[in-house]
Length: 287
Image (tube, rainbow, N blue to C red; front, side):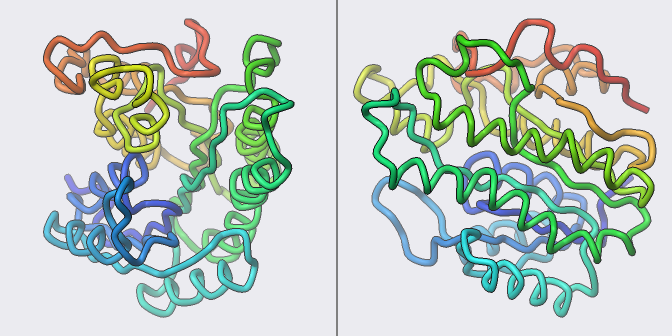
């Protein structure tokens, strides 16, 4: 059964990687998808534009549009939400995927990078959610999904890159607070984070200087995040909310125990991602 058929998803940063994988899984169900991102021209290190992504999603069975948006600016986010509603008649799901990263210690983090991470990650998530909420309230199974980590307040997750951790944790703090705030409106708010490194352009660019294969042998593919997000977004929004989900635990709890199809290479040994402890994600209960 196509659970997301004719549902409308607004996804930030969905031109490539994890955001695109989430969009593609929804497109396979026949969903409407608004790709909210900045990339309109090809980039030498970052594949995909809002237009190529929309074309690919349409070929996969979806109904997609790309809307050029910098989520640091309120007027652009409001415009993107309005265009989405005008095109598809409403919004059922908001996926806050867009993120900026600089894994640098304090003295090596310039304030321009600090401001960028907090403007995109925490503020962008808050503002995009805020703009979508009036329309989500009209949906019969509304969801907000934030690509943020479990809130493990342990020094090991902060000390190597304080600014980045604060910005990513801000996304999950939106989950923690909004899930309670919006419970009476029936809007689910959950987070999703990968257990291991995911083979994306961002990860490859970060690891390129230290690994010959750009880290592919240490990664899973973005498809595991797409499948995990699909599972979350098809839960009953009135029952499944406030969860800090982890991709492999979510997929396993849905009934799939063999995760070999998600290896970036057949012999890959996935390397743990930031912020995740072994127990994280194991306590969620699916329908």
